[in-house]
Length: 176
Image (cartoon, rainbow, N blue to C red; front, side):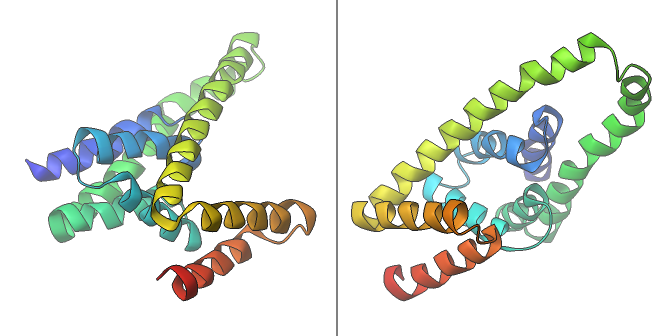
């Protein structure tokens, strides 16, 4: 039964997460933290941070790790397959249809209506992670990392991967 739960925890966000990994992260968090209670928000944010630091799709890395933590190697396989299956199914079934009607105003409106919803989901996830960091690392540490990350990303145009690496190093040295 646990393998089916792992599969569903990643399959449902994969189907509903229009826009890829970033759009499905709040949905995965809901399944893993709220529905199945396999992790706390803090633990989930750590898995997300590690997944962001490694190359490749975020959702598959998270599914593999969480699946393994919950149900071992079969859980890892179930989680990985669940993240790939919706895309595979939808690509085969819907891409022909969407390609045929790609210039349709209805298809363009669909995309326009979905984007704000994804923005709200990511905003809520950001607030939850910010609150978790504030409680875990403290206000000054969190505010300092927030300001430093903003300045490095927006003002100096440093690559996001380097900002993540710097944050990991900082966390190991000062928060570990």
